[in-house]
Image (cartoon, rainbow, N blue to C red; front, side, top):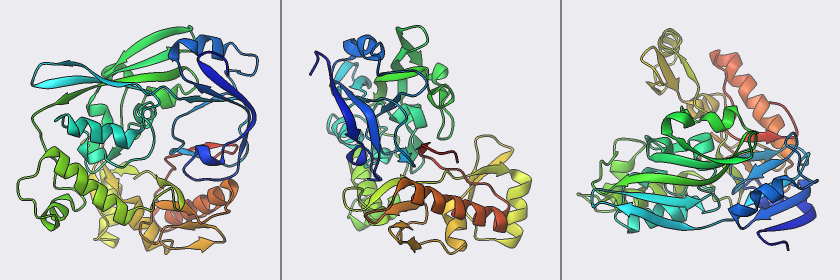
Length: 346
């Protein structure tokens, strides 16, 4: 072990992703101290073109081995930077696990992240995809993302506008090789503005016997719902929702509703477009519960691809492509994966 980081040759990545597929990295570099990053990135094993930074591996599918060194942020400091009684600024190192972070904020009486409970991954990965669930996106509560700009070799602080958050998107996805996220600062209110009218949250709270919910109650309700609907990656390999809900034009959505009146349609990212349910279309094409060997689709949720044990990333990718092709053939809508695919093109 070198001060600030650990270096392992020919490292297995099977346990580094929630899919649990076999993959190997020529070098795995676990970073325990952000100050060591310049030294890490100057190592001869690390090249900008082929190195990969990972968090909890919940948004990755290895369809082959890693082409270069894999850098894993293992920094885990979590603290309140300031609190004026109305809202607090919370700083989380990149390696802080996401769900414990959410529950910790709720225990501090802070609100905003409750609808994002039980999402796998780390704090550092959360802004990259602008993770979202149950009517909430993390970008709403991120004030600053701290990152190493690999282009200049300097630490930078990107405010919310500079992060360019959009649906499952950010500047960190568009310029994937430039920024290495080291920490995230959230601004979280103490007065809740609960979002209950999404995917059964209000009904779940009723089942829990709660009439006047707190933010923590909502977080627990979301945990209950997700545990029923989504397989536990510790039991069955998966990366949560594999496909993004596609955003299409208002005209195309209206035309689809003529033929498929029960298709769930939501407001898109602008007034002239709409977001449609990928899960509904996938299930309508007969894929829910489908299995090819150990590669399959969850019987509980059509958006979730699962590894029943010995599936490879290439097998899961092949299945995902077939699903997307069938949805496009039937509905004329292109669906795209949420996870980053390593070792193959979509």
